[in-house]
Length: 268
Length: 267
Image (cartoon, rainbow over all chains, first blue to last red; front, side, top):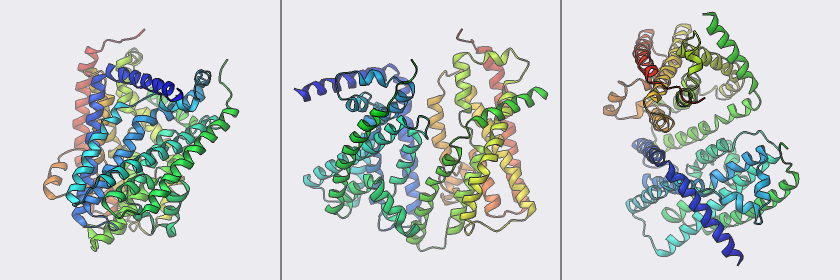
């Protein structure tokens, strides 16, 4: 009953987003071309790197490409379903329009988190999946249905974790109306999580690595799923990522509820 | 000249309003550099070589730091898209009605913004460069340094002209923003912002040197990094000046034809 109602809301939101996107079709296609071009640049960079060496802290070229594909997959899924929603939270707080969401007879966090779908980012998903399949084949990985299932599950954990972290950050705009934007925070998360986590271990006695794995665990989101398929499958990290995703998700709800006590509408 | 000085003064005041979290965001600019440096550390270790694409490890770190300086001069956020908005929404008419040259106005405004940015950025940049001092090349001598500064000024002019010309496209294509996104991506690679162009195979590099983008970032940076002899530095500056001149002609042509097409939409 409850699930059915929220399911219907979700379908309605997605339909609206699709209609909005298809109103500006030309823009959509240029955006998609731009994204593909960006992926091509990254692949070129990786080729240039591996012209110099055959291994980066134990990652071969195809393993690295698989990591890049996985990173693109995770970040695109997050951007598709959650980025513009998280971004909108701080905007709604600033303008006071959050009132209209809070008044509705459904979970405010749910309504805020799923209203918009970014179909441009969704177009990256097949590109990312293609890159992963190609890299895994070249690497000569034996893929079993179990591995694929586990990979999909871990990707789910990663997207959940990113959602929880970014939503929490967006919620803080109740206290800091003008803050360094969500956009730049997301940019830094993406640039940090893109690389093999091993490269951080030797910097500043491993403090940075520790912080990015255990305090703000953004390094896990691409590295753990990539390791599941093309490198060693370490169940401890898989379990840890799953745990972090659940903990952060619950924390995001708690922070949101707490923040709403402080929310004072703007203007009249 | 006096009216451009006024534009300059207004832009100075405008820029100082937003000094709030400027320092934090400037430090954050260096975060991707840290990861890039860690990546190159791993690449050097993996390759077992002393130099990659004619740069040693320390030079590679310096390269990325110096690229940040070149970007301070050459990057033009919202210049092209701003022109696009003025053309699309009819805001251009307020410049057409005044006895002022639109491109001159934009230039004066941009110079003021850049100067303020530099004055404010000098503290965080000095801190970062001081922390990284062991990686940086030795003092190159006053001649090379002056040539470096001249070359950086041309990076500014080159960045300005390229973005201005792209903005002028909006007379013909009403939405330049999405095109701009494609352009920025390609420029990130072609200018040497992504990695030093000396890492590329000769064939690819031979093509890239015929484009203006490498003269925005890569070549000015090598003047300081490689302590190029004066003759070589002057050759780079001459090419920069040529590109600025050529693109400037393009801007004038686009402007004179574009304004005739301009319809001044809006109320």
